Amino acid sequence: MTVTIDALLADAQIPVSDQKGFDVSAALRRLAADASRRTPTAEITRAAQAGQRLSVVCRWVLNEPDAAAHLDKIADGPGRGPLTEERMDVDGALVFASLLHLAGHPESAQFWWQLAAGAGSRAAAYCLHLHHLSLGESRRAQHWFHQLTHSMADSAPPDAAFIEALEIFARYVRDHGSRAFAPTGRLESEVDRLAARTSSSSVIVSRPDRQLVARLEEFSTGR
Image (cartoon, rainbow, N blue to C red; front, side, top):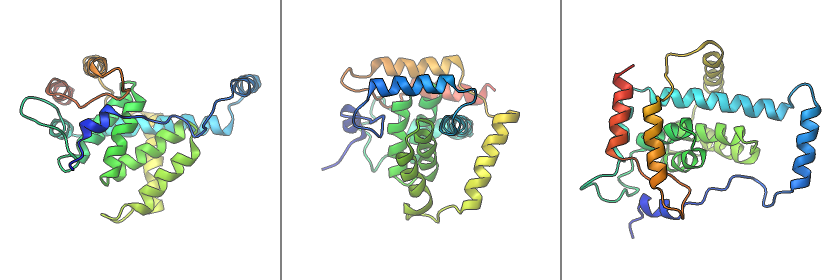
């Protein structure tokens, strides 16, 4: 039986915490304790830095010259048919996830990163590592870091020096600026339009369409 991405989207459920329950009283005590400190905790600082690095990586992915072409390969439209695992364009899923993250749809970004990482994208695995780290989900962050460095058999894993250089570069861009532009308001509006069309039974933004691809092409050529 052929598995379609559309079927996965219909039943998508994204866990947002390492913990099964949520203790409101304990959470309020932690918030009060954090507010009383003059400096952020190491965990808060690490999470903030991971979020900043993730935004840098997403902007670079979105600014790649062939980003719109890859997004078009997973776009819905007349005659396109269902998006199967065999027809999945890994880079297209990575571009869409990065756009979703920058447009403020983190659960959907996580879903599409997971599709890309499951198909062998080390860049998507790195994004998932940073995503979970930014949420304070250390175990999930470690899992995706292990996937990045050990578990993807199709290509040689990056060594520690490469990953460290990538993170140094992300910090430099965060501090000194970048030529990689953030999404325009029109591009974000197209993402919100797709989100508004999403079924009420799912929190995940469904496949991009040709209208979103056209906006991304405008974004790429209009800078």
